[in-house]
Length: 129
Image (cartoon, one colour):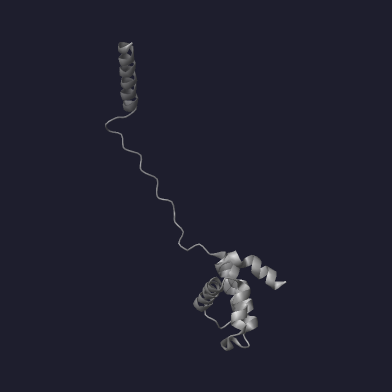
């Protein structure tokens, strides 16, 4: 039995050597590798972020893009600190620095939540009704 296995292994090895050498000649030139795939020259667009910026700038057109994004993130950080959107609005309403800006804060919060902290979306939708 061992001799049969040895013969079979030798036959398979010899077949592999023969197949590896088939068609190959010492003068053949290797096939060149295909050129690399083209890469995108622009960054992918974050649709939610762009929608947020456009929404905020529709209300506050002079607000720079970077400040709008920072504001949206700050709103979500603030909601995280207070634990709920409603508690955040209560705190803002009692802060004299925001007097007369409540509608803007509510508007920006409505835009920021889906983009930066979607875990509060259900609460924002409930409060909006």
